Amino acid sequence: MDIQLKRGLLDICVLASIKNGDSYGYKIIKDIKPYLTISESTLYPILRRLEASELLNEYSVEHNGRLRKYYHITPKGLQRLKDFDTEWQEITAIYHFISREDHINDEK
Figure 1 (tube, rainbow, N blue to C red):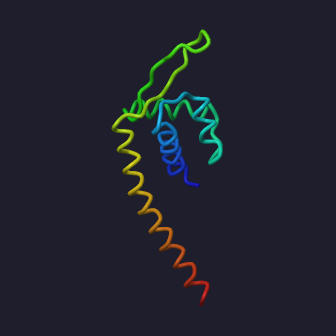
Figure 2 (figure 1 turned 180 degrees about the vertical axis):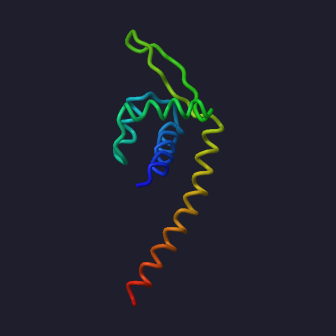
Figure 3 (figure 1 turned 135 degrees about the vertical axis):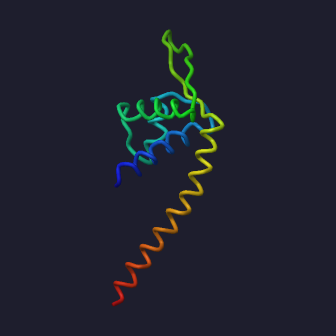
């Protein structure tokens, strides 16, 4: 898969994992796991990039005597998810066009 496409999809998956409630790194990985494998070394740069883009905010809460970083999706992050829906419809249309062409060539 194209690295830029995959990068964008990972960003969207992380945003989607926290859209219904704040979360922390390990839980995000656990929530995404049924759909794709993502490691901590992949996740944390994504979280930093999303925060730099103002798509999410970070805050800390004490948990078992340690500070745990939580992530909260911003209105801009929610808008990014909505925009992705539109983009995905366009990607699906392109896929159907490409698929259709393959079937036409198979018939010849």
